[in-house]
Length: 274
Image (cartoon, rainbow, N blue to C red; front, side):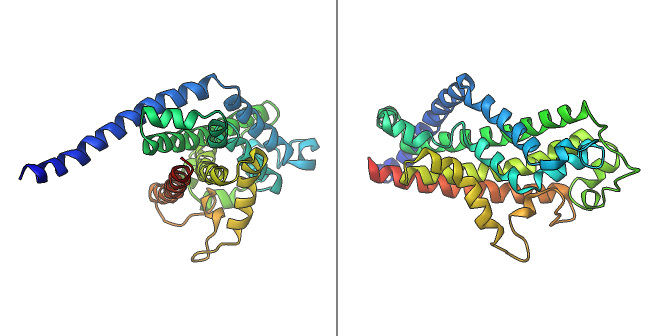
């Protein structure tokens, strides 16, 4: 009886320890992220890429259709925009080879738990990538606003945007909110791709490859079609379900699920190396 009770208590005790270690790791990682220049560099990089991907439109009077919304949507659909996903991965996706090089992983795991360590890194990679995409997009929007108005219904009917997700928000005139939610969807892609890049870094310790990986992965996923949908289903102008909330929840589950699988792969790879 006592033996059976001890078997029940041990897993519970282990889960408490993992949770406590996770919270400690998370605090340390967010503190490290906040002190690093990389997070801000990632935001600036996204802004720069959004302007870069406009190509000749950047030098055109009034940008795309003379308004911010059309310019932003146009920029995010150009091939050059894919580099923005590399900037989202830049601050933290290469953390595993960096800490392996300085023996920090072994030191941290001795003090805590490998599961908690990987879970913390996965969370910070995801949140940092998501925030960089959103904040970079918002900054780009306000910079464009200094030159052109938010919308111009006399030139653009915004048919694609109105028929996609958050169309009702745009129709009510909440352009900033619409663009932020649009960026949120892109951030879901960024979070998943950054964690996939982190998984790659566990097995191939090459910083350049880690930064290039999100772009390569996106190009590969474009060719993967499930029920006539590919990675562009994450873009706000694509609507899988009638409800915007259900659509966002569905995409979030996919994004977090990919990140969780990447975390499992990182855990397995790091455990083999220790």
